Length: 197
Figure 1 (cartoon, rainbow, N blue to C red):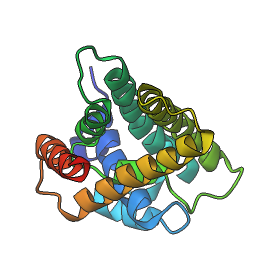
Figure 2: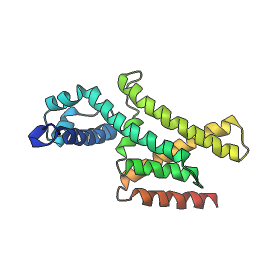
Figure 3: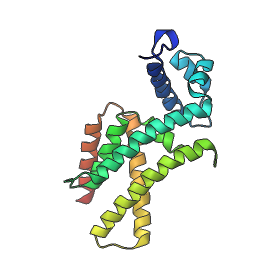
């Protein structure tokens, strides 16, 4: 049975609401400029209640990062091992779109450039960055291997291009949120097909 939370809302539900709002706040303004006052006001709760649930500002941020990071890394990992997929790049983009499902701030939360170096917040986000980057690097390696290209600089460049494509596409989606994950996948397929021709 769920414990009662603020204003009769079960605690688990209230925590998810706070995480949704905090993810948007951290993802929009960056860790350095996010406001606990704005989060509390948007969630219609007190700051002390947030601290009761999450321990601290960093605890709240970490909870947001872990929730977003787990969903993204699991989705991308599944896309890499799916059988019968003709285009791994499109499959990976589709996995990212469905994992985000319109919540593009979850991506910017993980790749937040305002995180203080070597802070706990940076190290937490870095863990998921490394997992996602490693899978991207492996996928690029497979593409180049299939093309009999073993040049390490080609690999480095394509990894940078891939990351740029994903980040730019997610940012574009954030500015055009009416598109569904499936629509985004179809759009990327059309654009990539047009470039290849």
